[in-house]
Length: 78
Image (cartoon, rainbow, N blue to C red; front, top):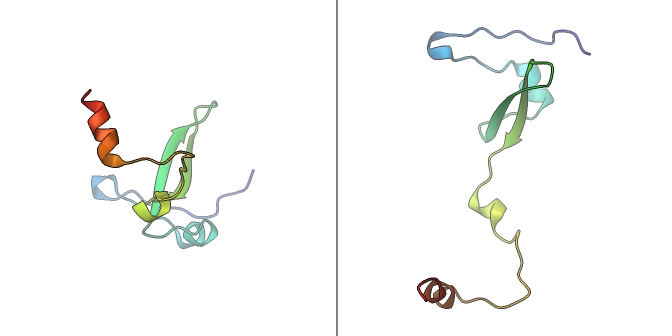
């Protein structure tokens, strides 16, 4: 377990800042989402991940068959 690397203060409306050391270490920027969880010991944990946008999602799923959006929509109403 590492020692304390940085300290943050909680301000009005429960806002805080992410210390520079942590931002640099985990490549935190304005596209970063912070996920909060509680581990099995009851301690808080945070995880940093990048936001996904439509460009990240396009092309992830590939189908072996050809599809047509109009035919798929018509199939919903049958």
